[in-house]
Image 1 (spheres, rainbow, N blue to C red):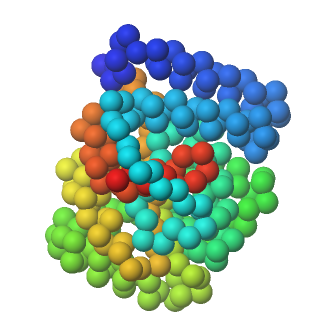
Image 2: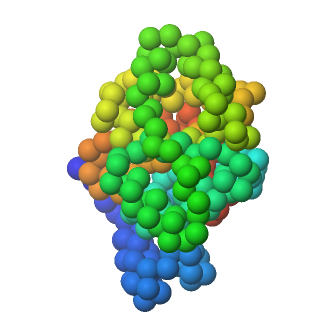
Image 3: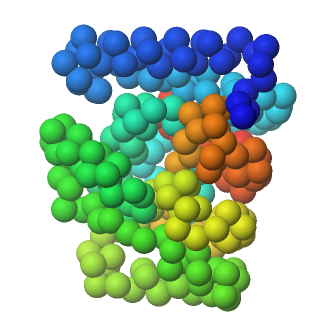
Length: 244
C-alpha cells in the first residue's frame, strides 16, 4: 500500500524529478558529478525531505560540513541508486580526505556498484571496507547501550583503525533489518547516538525512500517515524542539517 497521501502533489513531483534526473544522467554520459546532475539531485533531496518531514516543524536548524562529523548519528533518505551514489560520493570523499576508515554495511550488489562508481571518479577504495552491522546489533540486543559503547570503543583499538583518524560507518537500513529484525534494528538505532559520544566515529544510516513511499516492504511507516526520532542530523544538499 502506498504510504504517500493519495492527493499529495509531492507524489508526482518526486517521480518527475527522478525521471528528469535519470534522463540528464544519460545525456551527460552517466557522469553523476556533472553540475547539472548534482543540482537536480539536490532538488530531489528537497522534495524527498518535504515528504519525509510532512507536517513536522523543525526549529533552529544547525548545519555542519562533511569534514568534522565524529560523534554524529545521521540519516540519508534516498530515492533511487543514482540519488544515493551522488550523496555518498561527497560524504565518503570527505571522510577519506580526513584520513578516516570507511565501513559499509549494505547489500553486496549495491556495495560493488558504489565501489565501481567511486573508482571511476578517482576515489581510492583501499580505505573502504565491507562491514557487517549484525554484530553490533546483536551486542546491543544482548548487552544494551553499555555493551554497544564498549564494542565501539574496542573497535577503535583495532590496528587497521589506528592507522586512521577515525571511522565513518555507513549502513543500509533495509539490509540491517532483513538480516536481523525490525525490532532489534530500531532498538540499536535508539542507542547509537549515545554510544557515539566522545568517540572518533560517526554513523550514516541510509533509508530507501522509494520503498517507504510506494511499497513499505521494509522501510515502513514505523521504521521511518522512528528514524526521525533517533537521528540528530540528516544528510541533505551535501551537508549535515540538525533536526533536533
